[in-house]
Structure formats: structure tokens, C-alpha cells
Image (tube, rainbow, N blue to C red; front, side, top):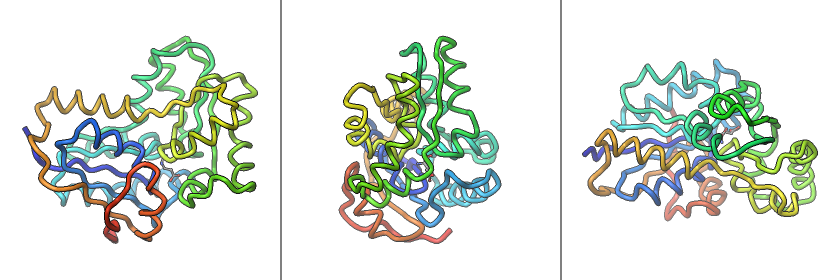
Length: 262
Ligand code: DGL
């Protein structure tokens, strides 16, 4: 057994869509969540920038003596996981590599992936899905403005609905009936997306598959915590108030996250 905390991070509130399931499935664990709101969005950053940012976050978690870090961020999973994992001695769980392995075998035919510019440009989701199921035909669509829309909490204004619709339409026109939400921010838009597609598309939030895998892996390695020692701790790199308000849809924080400058 190992009572040390699990670190969870993302550029902002996106990781709460994963954290919600982790907290539910692994309720004895201690958590430290870091939302890098100062550097948001990650999706338009270069690999060098993301390496520098991720290194300081991983150092932060190392100082907190975590036993594992959950990359609740598709963009860093696709662009820097391979470089960064071997530099730290705790477990690192990247969302894309694990989610694609779980999801791919369950589907056939046309599969859409909605993600950031960085994730789409890396081709990592497509490669990982095809590696696990040759019968898939994968179509990717970058959604450059969606993360900012989710962080703003405004999914109803005409302007934002048009932006969302513009990126969804190409995948619907290609005939994708199953679409992976390949950015952890996007599950906040599930209701809007379902309405836009008139309920004809199955939007896949990879979070539960990812979380189940993490649970199995920690169990196999005898790394589970016996009991929760403290309530989940939240840290952000800017604007704690905005984080607390915008994250409400997935996880209600009982106090403001702590501001930390890395
Ligand atoms: N939510 C993250 C992801 O899954 C990061 C999005 C961003 O900051 O652009 O890719």
C-alpha cells in the first residue's frame, strides 16, 4: 500500500473531467490537482514550450512526493510524454496512449477525433487507435477555440455556438457516428454537441476507460492508498476565482484553489 498523493494536471479545468472519475473510482486516494491557467491554452504551443512547462509541473509534483502523475491532458500526452516519462521515478499515466488502447477495440468503421491543434498535428491519437484496431477509419478535427470557450463558461452565445458548430460539422459530413472528445476540456460541451448533432452521434469521453486502467495498474502494483488522509488539493498558476467558477460543471470546489508560481 502507498498513501502518497496522485498528481493530476492539465492546462486548466479540462483535467477535472478526468479527476471527477478518479475521485469516484479511487476514493481512498489523496490528490493534488494542478491547473496551469497561466499558460493556457497548450494546444497552440510548440513542443519545446510544452517540454519546459511540463518539466516545471513534474518538478512541482516531485517536491510534493507523489507516487504517480496523471496526464489529464491530451496535448502534453501526445507531444511530450515520451521525452518526460523517463526523467522522473514516479508512475506517469498519459491519457491518449491508454484511452486509445481501451476504446479502439470496441468500434469499427469511421471514428472521429476532436482535439487541439497540437494533438491533431502530432497524429498520436490516430496512430494509437489504428495500432489497436486496423478496421477503423480515423478522421481528426482540430478545434482551436474550444478550450477558451470552455474556460469562459459561455457555451450558449450565438458567436460561440457558431465556432463550436464549425469544427463539429466536418466530422458529421464525413459520416462519423462515433467521435472521441480528444481534449479533456471538451466533455464540458457534451450537451451542446449532442444537440448540434441532433442526438445522432455518440460522443466518447475517454475519462472512465482511462481511470479504470489507472485503478487496475495501481492495484496490480500494490500502490493503492489504504485511506484518504486529506481532501483533494487544488493549485492553479493564475486566476483561482475563474477556475472555481468554470469547473463547477464537473467538480465543485469547496474553497478557492491555491495560487502557485512555478
Ligand atoms: N485539456 C488539454 C488537452 O486535453 C489542453 C488543452 C489546451 O490547453 O489547449 O489537450
